[in-house]
Picture (cartoon, helix red, strand yellow):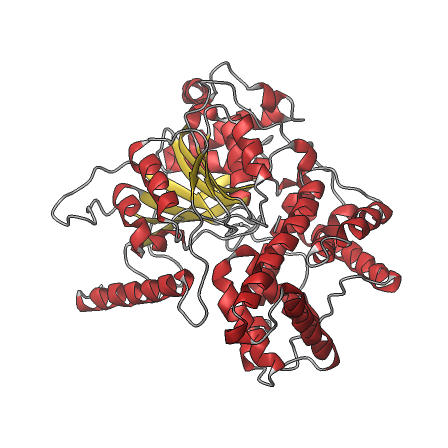
Length: 556
């Protein structure tokens, strides 16, 4: 899947009574080695965080950001089984509820608490999330909720994890063979082993404490630090997985939860089989892109059939292997850039235009789209390190490359586009130097958890649709909203107004739709027209400029 005040003994006992889910320690926690001890450690850490709160102030590097955005930190134990041991600090950002009804500026709306958001990963940084309240789709939610983002353990400034030098992480150009040779596989195995050793060398004994279960526990400590008795949370992609762990471990702490683009929580799928399912789904979405390009051949000239578009892609790969564009864009960089077409159809026009221009002799659009950005190397390496550590720690992986080779050689016959790229990204887990956990059996009993809302697109490649169906089955009372025939990854407050209406009703009023609710697909992008994402970027820039100008005029 591709982010302290000391409690008295009496106070701890009181908080334990408040914090423990109904019936005491849930069976799911007892089923995890050390689960009961770590749950008790979470209670202790949450008590301390509630007493300390978060001292919000100016954000680091806050130039040109709205003064309404504020930042702080919350301390969490590195090891929840030992809550009095080493502590790490997670960075947190917040924009307070505006209380202004965007449809009637004279009317105030009641504050509903904090809405905590995680954008996925593992390894994604949510610190910029509160700024999203400037966009039209979010204004009603921003009026009612404090929007809270944070950097999960290991990410950004939150005890950052690293596995190699950043300057080595974005080496370019690289190859990306669809059917790798035995020699190439041997090379990648050696690189995976070296990467795993680098993670162990740089992180030391802390490496084992970057897990999805720890992310769920951190979320409960953050809830307490924010002064929220019950959590309102929205997780996208990987955020749905540890959000589901949270719902299983702390169901009585949940107020409302949105799971947007759902990771399959079946323990048997975490994470080796989940990545294979993802590779198969990306092939379908890559085909969707090629069909769209073929329908718009008049605009791009890449071919009138998906097969012809594939031939244009192969022609570009061959040319880049012989002479990298701009000296840094080879077949690997082209593949990585076009992988974005599987996540968001907003990337379709720009990707087709860059490929078309390159084949016509102009490589500038391709270089702009695909060349590594040196300034972002440190952030990219950090995100990859956290991704790898969390997935490798979370579950058992095959330790014999022959198993990976057999399974993925078979898969690549029908899904060649992403299969081997996914293998190389995850292969360090075969050689991981610390013990793996056993995945938690996500599930809640009827009445144990408030109603939760699941959002999913039928053709999502990054989190295939069956994951949403599986989570709905496991979380009693959950309701799934499906965007039919669409494949964008992350559908909440995107271009689909039907989906957004369901999301507003849930977050603002607590209403869930009828079971099996569905929305028609949002329109596909049109060539040479601004996409939804382009429009929102402009709106965000304009809003930030306006806020910054207002702050300067007021002397802030």
